[in-house]
Image 1 (cartoon, rainbow, N blue to C red):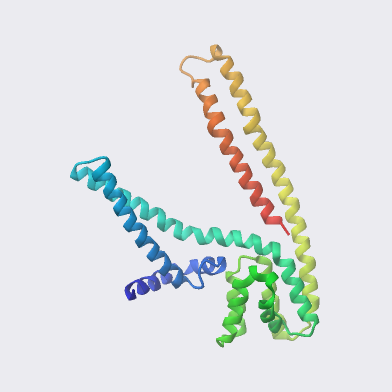
Image 2: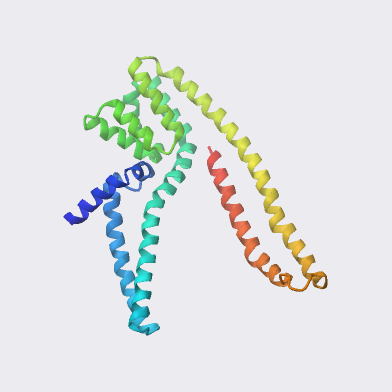
Length: 282
């Protein structure tokens, strides 16, 4: 166990840039803890891969020693490579996905924060008090980092800068930066909060316009691929006699279009539309 902890610490040093995504996505409270879990999971996957490869090589295919060893090693390398790749990419994907969810909840965060400011609490006390609102449970990672950092005696600047760096919510990062400046200067935070609210909805309006334009272009492309292209291929297939000898078989092209290209374009269209809608949801 001590060896695994040391390995996790070394990995966290070499992949320090991943901390923003690991902590900000809520996957793990620290990069060391994440790599500790990843190492144990990869060891388990390695054991299963070894067992499965041995069964396949010896029982199913009954390969000779050299060929069996090559297949065995290739399978282990491929499985471990995929597992390591997923371990490095997954936090980035979850970080981005969580950012969309937080942006959608950000107006509620601003509402509760401004209400606490109006009630007479200072900016920092208001941030600490936000932990008590169940409606803001999506911001648990950021709020707990602020609370724990201040309770451990870290400076306000360090805590705010760290949370602003790891959070996937750009609006929240901007708010935290303003809070740091307000705390230093001692100015009234309400004008800044009102400005941030107005700026947020202006930004959302521009994002909606961009999303509408992008979805219009995307729909035209999808229509061309999913409707017009199969029609062209069908006409081509019905006039096979006009195709020069040696050209691609139009019937094969029609099958590929119907069974591969159209479904793939539909799935891609759905994913991109869902991505755009998530980025502008409120």
